[in-house]
Amino acid sequence: QMESGKVKEKELTVGIDSCVKALEELKQTGENKLQLENCLHIQQEEDKQLQALAEDLQQYEKQIGLLTRAEKQYQEAKQIMLAEAERATRLEVALWDEQAGILAEKLQDGEKCPVCGSIHHPEKARLSQEIPEQSYIEQLKNSLECFSREENEAHGQAAAANSKKEMIENNSLK
Image 1: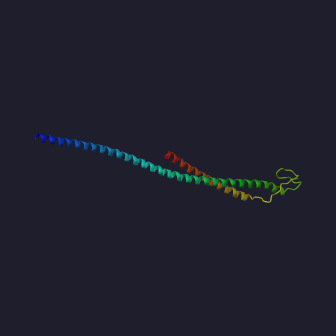
Image 2: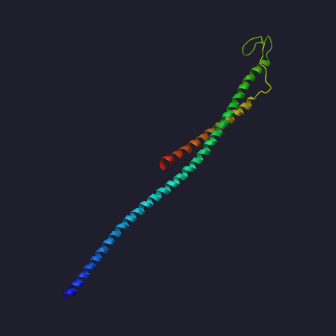
């Protein structure tokens, strides 16, 4: 009986050792599970950040497209405005030049010039073939104001697009 008690005791010891070992393995499995859950949580957060970054990058690329178009529109509006300003100035100068010809047409030797008072007029100014009309020049100036407003608006849009692009750069892409 003693022998069988020792065998029984040995069997129980082996069983207990086996249970302790299984318990240790379960404990380690629980720790591994916690580590895996922690890694999963970190990975999910990184995925969210990556997705947000991808969305920001997409917005950034869209904003660069908008900026490029706005800058092109601004440059086109600026070129039109400068060309029209030059044209209006050229015609206005021509009109002033023609004013002398118009006055000279009415001058008679012996009569005083309304500008300088001279009664001798040896070299009168002559009218050119094309006299710009004052009303036409005024229309050009009005058009020039419209072109200037369009240029300013295009410049504002380009500046706004650039500001938004820089905001995205500063907030998301660094």
